[in-house]
Image 1 (cartoon, chains in turn red, purple):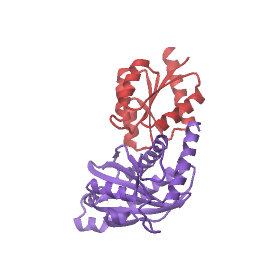
Image 2: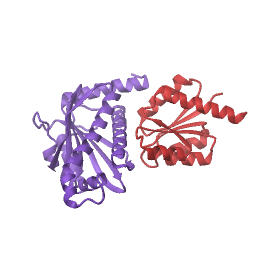
Image 3: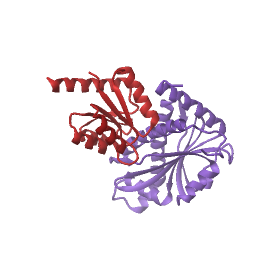
Image 4: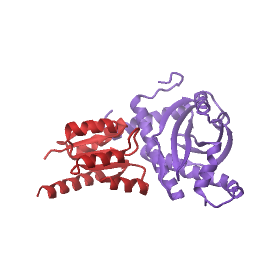
Length: 127
Length: 212
């Protein structure tokens, strides 16, 4: 099964870095990028990604708000919010928005573990 | 592009530097949040590299004339001085967020230096060490020192002020316990340090993206 992953980060470098890790873990998956929440909502409509990875601290709408909106529009989408800001309040809000919190910089292992949990969840859901 | 700078960073290098600062500041907010037992909300940092004179002008233009700063020197592959700067009026607010609410003004004033030094220590250490770790380098950081005065007086290196020194100026807003406290972070680097930083950024980008 080939999935589509949407990467949302205002930093081009951060997007490139995540794209590199994704291409190592799942070279056959499609990657779509967005530099802010507005662009992300547009790409989300166009491509209906199964997985969305969102930076928390972005100009305009923050990552948790975006995660909540995406979760509301399609609860089957797996969303991860990433940040180096590991305050309990941030992690709690990310989880309340239906997202998984991943610490930045995201290691290949942490990303891999998150994607395994996504695959398990989707397989369980389709059974 | 800043034509007055002797070294120009590319857009991707500046992006990488902003991302590094973002990592550093986010870790610092986590540390500060633990100190005040309250969430510290951060804005997206705005990073610019300026000459010393441009940085002073920029601080003054933002109405930040009378300032209080905590500074710490760092050395390793890159040496320089890091500052956490607040408009003087805001520094007491920060102290109030850090200490118990029912302390008298006298007590708060007595604690001000210590609270500022400790806050600066947490934020600057966290920021510098996160940036150094991500660049795969080590950094040695001196003890914090609190100074009050004007921006012109701050932005000097111990080795002697030089108008061509570069300043990595980071604007960031952070609010603690619903108190809006605006702070600036600045790092003063000399020309050789900026050249090394550029090289480290090139290596960092290669490592992260696998692209040359």
